[in-house]
Amino acid sequence: MKVIVIGAGPSGLMSAISFASQGYEVLVLEQNKSAGHKLLLTGHGKCNFTHLTSVDEFLKCVVRNNAFLKTALYTFSSQKCVEFFQDLGVDSYVVEERVYPKSNKAKDILDALLNKCEELGVKFLYNAKVIKCFNEERFVVSLEHNELECDKLVVATGGKSYPQTGSNGIGYKIATEFGHTIVPIRSALCDIYLKDDFLKKLDGFTFEGATLISMTNNAKRKLTGTVIFKDNRISGNVVRNMSSLINREEVKELELDFKNNVSEEELDHLLVQKFSANPNREISRTLTAFVPFIISDTILSILKINKDLLCNAITKEMRKEMIRYLKHFPLHFLKFAPLEEAIVTSGGVDVKDINPKNMESKIVKDLYFVGEVLDVDAFVGGYSLQIAFATSYIVK
Image (cartoon, rainbow, N blue to C red; front, side):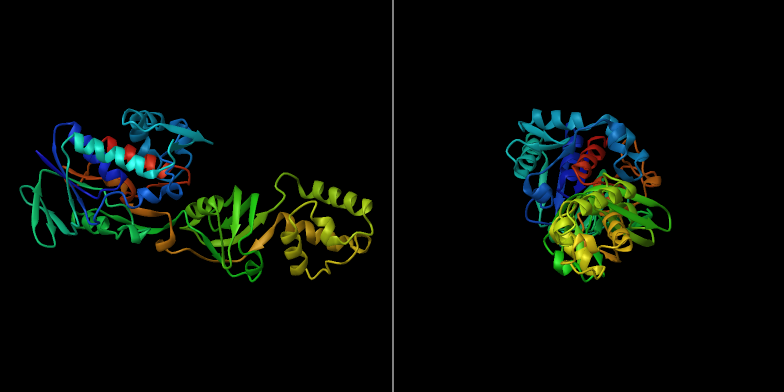
């Protein structure tokens, strides 16, 4: 029996390996001239290919439809993923639960998958642009210049982010043609654009350990991590994770807490102590005991407090305003970065019509959807690749 896999990314290659291991004749179609374009960019080319933690902890970091992934992740856990690549000759190391190939080269992960495909007799057809798919007695895949038939069809086309790697949303078109519902897609793991003028001053500055707070029409959320300021937006993993949590909600407010380790009352006490100990020191110099100069300077500028003012001239009202900005620094939301700039796509093939035990369509027998084309997405840190591998490993 013949299987066609559309897409030679991580989910497509793992699906090919899985079906070929079961004795099927497998052909992988890839519209690019080579495999794994997006995979090679993962982790800035170092490829954090999984997140080494328990399944229960892993699922807490899945933003959409985590329950759907239970079978896949218990069958092919992050530990099993590490062992799988170890068996393929890829040694790895772990940093804060993120797993990387020892070489720090994404190409080693890609080569391991391709070599396993070759060993199992998987065939590849590159520069193969799929136009449409349909089924008669068998599945028919229409390319630009010919048609191919198969008994089982796997859609592993990815989402619509990073279009330069070939992600063009064809998987959604195929799913719709077969009667599947597409949950509207959104940017996920992306930067957040702001309206604030002070960003130009902070462009390129990185603040570690900030708490980003979002208030939406649904909930208040807090995430702590590194925030990177750019001339018109904020970036960094904490921002990207937050974007995935709130990209379907109405954003009411965004704030940064620069001193999340102390309460407002404690901070007030510390400021009073510092001012009393240094009454003749400029406020701009004194505040650097709490935050970097560029942040204190920005806060004083916004509050229109003269940075050369001495501590003994600071009023209680001024101090309270400083505390408010240190703990609730306001950010004015503009938009989420577009899909072209997003790391992954949120939304996709509705999982209610997919069998979580083997990723087969409940609507069309022998049709499978795996990886990012599904309505599942997760935080930064190797989660997305693990999901791609796990959903593809269990196809049968």
